[in-house]
Image (cartoon, rainbow, N blue to C red; front, side):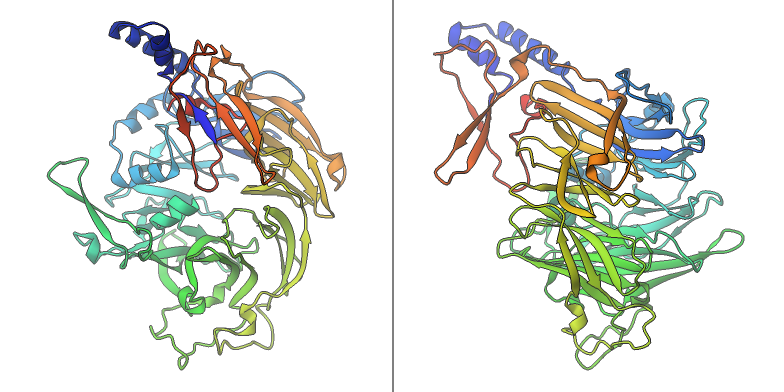
Amino acid sequence: METCNEGGDQTLTDIAISQKSWSELRGVVSDLRRKLSGVSVGSVPGSITFRSLPDGRTRIYFLSSPSNGWETTLLFVDIAHSDHANGYRLHWQPIIEANFQTVSSTKRLSREEQLLWERKRLATWGITSYEIHLDSGKLVFPAASSLYQCIDTGFMAGPLFPSEIRMSTPGAKLCPQICPWNNALIAHTCSGDLYLSHSITGSSVRLTHARKGARNLANDPLTAGTPSYVMQEEFTRYTGYWWQPNSNDGIYRIVYEEIDESDVKIFCFPSTSNSEDIDEFRFPRAGTPNAGSNLKMIQFRLTETLQIVDIQILDLQYPLYFMFPWMEYMVRVGWTPDAQYVWVQLLDRKQQRLELILLSIDNFCKPPPNVYNSENHFSPSSASVQVIYSEQSSIWINVNDLLYFLPSDDPTEVKFIWGSEESDFRHLYLITSSIAGLNNEVEEPLDKMDSSFLQPRVTSKVALTQGDWEVLGKKLWVDELNSIVYFCGLREGPLEQHVYAVSLRRPLEVRLLTRPGYSHNSIYFNKECTMLVTVYSSIKTLPTCQVFKISQSDWTVESISLTPVGYLLEPSALESELFAPEIYTHKISSNDTLYSMIFKPHNFQNGVKYPTILNVYGGPEVQLVSNTFKVSVLKI
């Protein structure tokens, strides 16, 4: 439970003591707004990525608003190999020329961008996301319905002015992704389909043709590469296509999600841009059908002259809904590190059954006859589709992002780290499952959908963490060289998020790495887990962003050492404690502890009654009471 008072409560306080004129009330409100504007946290760095440069420097990229600007832009700092413990603020440098922001902001946001920003809960203006190819330094980002690119060589003499990726297709260009093994190829979505651009030749091709260009939604229900509304809003997945990480046969592959909204009801609203027009939206109300979902694959080649040729759309031999008739949602998708399998997490409508499956490349083929029944079989091998883990709950399963595939020399097994709430608290497990190899001499035909290989064959399951506390489900990081897993959790209590480490070789020995008294709500590691950036705050301190180097002498968590390098955002306290709430606890009859926060009116006096606003959110996975800075609550 959380109670708070609006900023205007200073006015109510004054009214309780003495009546004020409207002019005086306006002055009180203006003064409060002025104070609140100085407590802005819009400059907190976010979307942090790390890049190792040839001379040993580490370049840290991030999005933020510079001190002399109001739009979010792309910035960086450099960390030298010799840098050591220091208390200074690291010097922010812009990647993008300042006048580019003005150019990009003159364009009106498209409807697609507005909807995406709403679902991502974005409240900033300017550059809100970016893609980087770490080897080459190529940067691609969407802005004002277009895509822009530039290359950071690592030795910039000054800010870069990005060039627009020219495409004749109308509509907003969104969600760009650079091919991992050829940075000249950039895929993106536009008007419900996937497109591909080659930055050297300047050519652009349409990869999918899901949308037919009908004048109304009822006659155009298919989209490719863009998740459905439910997937974005409820499961926080905003990506609908995935590049193959690498290829040993010269063929480029993209797995993508095709959405069919034929059964989703259409609602009509007056247009926000023209009062005479009507906007149509598909919205799956509770109890009505959701969008259908299936996986497909695009493959193509490049000629010697860099022309994109031999584009093919491949289907699964059996659609997912046929192999798994209970599935409702395809909540997570990706490639295994060896690029031989596509992994998919499937969830039923009641959210009580979750399965992790592997689909081999050979499962995707030219479209077979659209007939799927017990008398028509296409006989894929047992290696083509395999369930490697299954989970069920009598209540519901919270989807998380705690999945990490580990390297394995045995083609008949797969090892991965998995986050599960099977113990009533989310914890990490190291799981080994047996799989059928792609090159087995004897292949098991798929005669029935309930074949034994659709049951997970778990050979080993080891709990890495345990206890009456929770591992947070956002992400985990693995130092494969030293067998160390880094994660965020609530072991110190439910009010503070912290960073922890556990060794794959010594499970259950968990070490706290961050300082109590603050909550670390945004955590970033580089790929090698040798550098950490954390954004932390408390109810009485503004957000701080600090950089640490990580060193280690062996595979134990005791040998981990964090050395502070500097600040991306220095620590600072509030001008006055009048902005800070008070935290209260109350133990109820079930022996559970409830936490609450009270924001008292300014000029608070004991014995005086004040109007009170009770602010409670009863939904899952939203925690209002925590030891973090609460500027968002102050601005209600």
